[in-house]
Image (cartoon, rainbow, N blue to C red; front, side, top):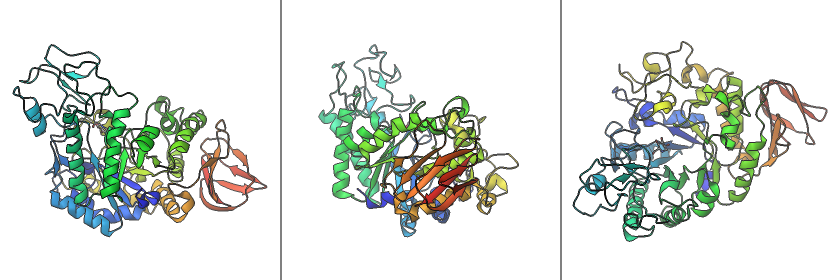
Length: 509
Ligand code: NOJ
């Protein structure tokens, strides 16, 4: 297990929208290098970059055309190596995004695979026997290439699924069993790509759709076997490099597959969505001040998972990511401060999505860009300062328009504002680094029943008290202690924690 993960705080960067250093309207690697000091000032010591590889950008780069080449719009491979070096010099790790489940339909492997004549790549993707063969239970693109067969899709139709075989083979005439030598070649090809970037200085990968490799594998037995092999490679050759899965099944991803971390994703109705986004625009969320959301559905789901996996890895809470509406679409400013208090004091490894530290707003009405659709509104340019494109780019045609509101938050106007989300985020990240009890593997014990609207949990010598509602609450406490941090109005008095609406208290006992 890479030791640095225990005190890691990640910052997710959507490269096209972060900082444009050459005025072409699109963020780039040099732009990220120029903002590393900013990342450090936030207290983040690790980055996750969304895909930076060559791509036709039908899905914002999750449709890779060349895994070993940086997309020219972002720079060159040398720029990426320079980013690794500059980040390392500042104590910042860099995780790339690995997309193992599918490629672009313009990837050279696919261009070969779709040819009629059998060749080295014919089995790299999943094709049916003939075009007349398109079982409805599978997502297929039909009748669009010279090869007499339909190809299986992993996401958009321009993203053919790579072939890792089938756990249960239901159509032996075109499905290979997982473990077939051709499928093993796919595994080796992905490992080769990982080695390519790890050898150049990357510190690991966020793995896209990590559960999607082997098909007809509901329990993920064969998929886990593949990742276990990858983990063996990491342990042997890259022991300080890390893998985080987009999976949200930590028992499988961490315990069985060997991922060091797994994201707690926003699946409607699951524990994560209950906290911030549940109901009609968050009206049933725990952190909505209307007090309609109980913590219990979250603790019922999260705690068993946490207890079963905490010895082997970390469950990751994120403020948001590039696939969800920003939390500003659901909750008010004070609630968002409490959300951050929660995320940065829970176990695991926290991820901060660029712009969430200043409370960037979800831009609901944008036309889809690069396969973003409703996600586009969370992918707008970072808002740095007043002026053209809020400091993102000097171009007249930025990647996406910036927030046009007169009161759009920027780093410049939030940084010195004591009432800002920025202040809370940076304070809490600093406290997380300072107190070992708040690190990834520190203990966690909920002290209030899941039915109570105000709640508390303890991590070693620290207790976090939350009142997310608009009502006054008192929590009995058997602990006395010193207030370390506070949001809103709350105090310890007469053996009680007295909490005004929407408040948070961090107490050391
Ligand atoms: C999950 C990624 O986060 C998302 O942005 C992408 O569209 C799909 N996987 C397909 O790769």
